Length: 370
Image: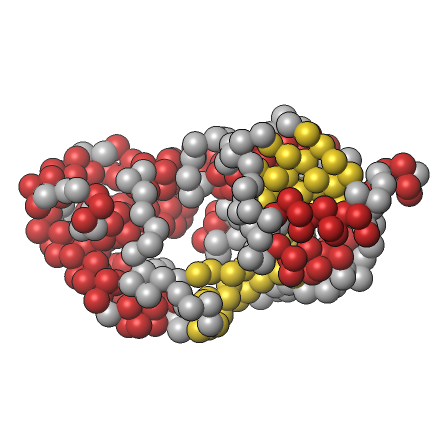
């Protein structure tokens, strides 16, 4: 691993620790990286350092970073000799970071000009362990044209001034899809401690990091604005992303959150209802993915998968308790699952798969509201 600085060292130039260390992994990021770096350089709050971790790039990513670093001494480039993955890149950045708070944005997104200023102001109001903010998910089709957007954000700001309040909010944040993201949080570096991103856990590396971080977090502020703009590319047939470990990983997500709530002493009937509903959503997606040709599952194998699911201890604990907060479809599927209706579940998976692959526009409208 090599580390290169641009016009100088942020710590030695200013004589003090920067408020923010921005850790940005980059792999084959040339398409949007220049825009992303300009979005950071244009921030109204200037007390930051940016550590770009080149994770074995073979495109022009490194050249782009170096061109910015030559002009701006707050930008540093750290390079892996070969591609090691997102978690390893972030962990490298954590070791390099010197700021009071760490932020982990992606290399293809962009941010409102006052993002750091507003987060800084909120953090210093109460000296919090972490600030959580919202995101605007911006959808683009296969040709790169914008097709819609949605906002994920708290309707009202929330202050958790002690550990009890933080722990009592975890399930609410997960229900609102704010708990799992690392990109929409600024973490106090000292509070991170030994927590690191886990390797080889697709889909849930952010979530597992947050489980570790919030185990000991004693204060938090959840903000009511969404300055983070996340690019989400949607292929024409919506089938470009596939992983045979999808259900394995999301089952672990539910298990980890359940176990954390138990440790926090807040695992009650209401918590089981929320976790049950979330689990049903992941099961629905898994049923659809089982119909994908890349899953290489015949009808008999899909039936066996359902029967194994019905015997799963986490399934038996949570799915019969699933609440009705997810709408009519989730409620219907939850009932089919609770009654162990194999045929009905297989039909649901097949129908979703047909809509996804043959009627992409309808699927996008149903799933993303666009």
